[in-house]
Image (cartoon, rainbow, N blue to C red; front, side, top):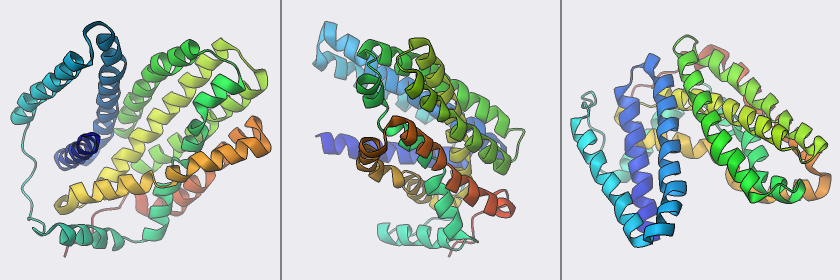
Length: 302
């Protein structure tokens, strides 16, 4: 059952992202990405924190029935949503579509640099967050209540604000400038945890650090999502967005074990300094792609 739920959830995410990419004009993608982050965070809050509170009073069975009822309401909004533009149909065979989507991506200029940029752009931020709960709980001695308040309260608000500010900025800036500026702010936001590791258990500074890190993370995530949308050929939107999203998260799969070894070997302060340094490759690849980032368009599909 859990496998089926995960499968259908992932399929729904891909369909929503593809629809969003097809429907939005290029200048709307930044705000579209920001709204996507906002909606995802609200959904996580409802299905996470609110569901736990409800389950404590009415039990899990009724709680999950209410969660399912919320999905029924979404069917009405889906029915009323405008259709995406008509496009030439892709191959009816699943594997042919996947291969064609990959082939189309591989026709882009400087594709190796492009894929490396996508992998590394958020990698330093992911490293910084990979052991965050352990760092705050065991490294600094914060309570679970303090950590929950910082992440689920302040972090929640900061991420949404960052995504909205990033989306608005993308209506005024080109995508290269947004990716560069937000990538730099993301890198320097990790320094807050270096300072936190030095000053120790100070709740006020924890709140400040979490707010800055999540705000800057929201900025960079909105810019990256908008960029990934711009790379998708309309014939292969779902396949290509899924592939690009998987590539963007590829490096994070290996971070957990590596992060643990790093902390045990060098300690928390050098670990968070390395998380800042790991942001640099993505920025370097971005600079090398400067002439292409703003002009990337889907190659002619075959």
